[in-house]
Image (cartoon, rainbow, N blue to C red; front, side):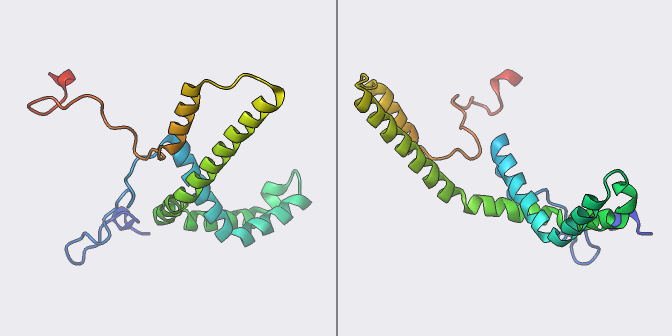
Length: 171
């Protein structure tokens, strides 16, 4: 049996020990909860794709055994779970996060295209039915909102830094 120090996060004894140091992630940029959920979905899809054969075999067995699935398909369940555990690593999560960041610009362009189309349709609808035009200030705000980039990492602090360092609440 392996000792606890030989786990996946332990540093190697060769060299200076920094090659295998456990890092939480190569992408430390904070994301919003919905963005993290999107990254998690990409991660889950990648893991499911890697273990598609095992999942398919378990599903076929589960279709044939309704109440006895936990007993009859035990080996297939263990094979599927071990495959998923083997592929659900921090490195795979980092790759999924990088894939999410790579597709960010395409998603932003698509979202902007849909919003512009929605504004055009609303304008057409108002003209068609003879409804009053929207407030020009509201239209300007919507256009300005479309021009803004997606937030990554939250907002900057609006307060100016306090002289002497530190937060004024800690004094």
